[in-house]
Image (tube, rainbow, N blue to C red; front, side, top):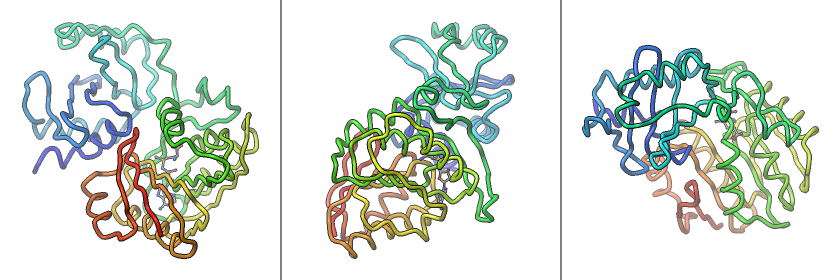
Amino acid sequence: MDSSRQAQGLLAYLERHGCETALVASRRRILFVHSAARCGPLTNPQTARPLLEDEVSFIEDTIGTAVADSYILRVDTTTGRLQPLDGSALAPAVIAQLNGSPQLRAIGIRVTDAGQMHSTIEGTDELDRELGIDTAGVAFNLNTSGSRPVHYAAMPYEAIDVLLGALAMNHEDVFVDLGCGKGRVLCRAAQWPIRRAIGVECEPALAACCARNLATMRGRRADTQVLCGRIEEVGIDDGTVYLTYGPFPADVLAAALAAIERSLRNRPRCARWIVAGADPTTLASLLEHSSMVKRVEWQQAIVIHLAG
Ligand SMILES: C[S@@+](CC[C@H](N)C(=O)[O-])C[C@H]1O[C@@H](n2cnc3c(N)ncnc32)[C@H](O)[C@@H]1O
């Protein structure tokens, strides 16, 4: 099977974090992965060839387990520093293990900056604390709502701030996070002077946590609301900026687009749909069939301009 197809999960992961080269590590193995363009294919930069099947399986396993003894790290090729991408807190023993690797030595990378590697697994995040919320943690295969399993991980603050800055929303904007999780992006958006920030979340526990965060957040400048329900079922008729962040399956993305289109038909206006972390091929084929898509651009994520 085509390795770039198999490793879609990692590709989406790298794209979401705006990173081209990553290190996937476990106690068993260390592997560098490079995605030449934002949409692949994935190669092993040390061998300059596409990933082998067993390398792909290793990556898939690492993404699947995500914590405990596996790590995905961004490789900053200019400074030679590594930063965790998957929320792992690296223990000193792991740093020692990584530094002991002949592969890392060969390319001159040393892991020294343990202080920067804050844990988002156990529930502490410096920026969360500043904002007065708790959006920490990653969760795989949640399905308490009886739906098919979903995954939770908040967008990194750095990416959120760059994205919101580029969107330059004003008092007429209604920001809608489709799949808002614990509400990190929502709370950040509500610090902008916009009309309203609305979150949609299908997992009741996450929606409840989001509501708590909206109640405790500091620096609010917009009205907020969280709706517990599925993207496929909820209609948001006054959204001007919609976000989906995560590797949503094709039918959920299709439902998100259909919901936006429905609302543009009900109340004709211009809107933007920000898509981060989705499979670009799936997205492209979806957009092909929409008569409302006017323009697609890249601003830290895929920005789709629609008009009804
Ligand atoms: C990757 S998380 C992103 C959370 C949030 N946007 C953030 O960055 O802080 C994706 C969220 O979408 C939710 N989700 C997945 N499928 C959904 C659906 N069909 N309807 C509503 N929420 C969904 C998941 O439960 C999860 O909380």
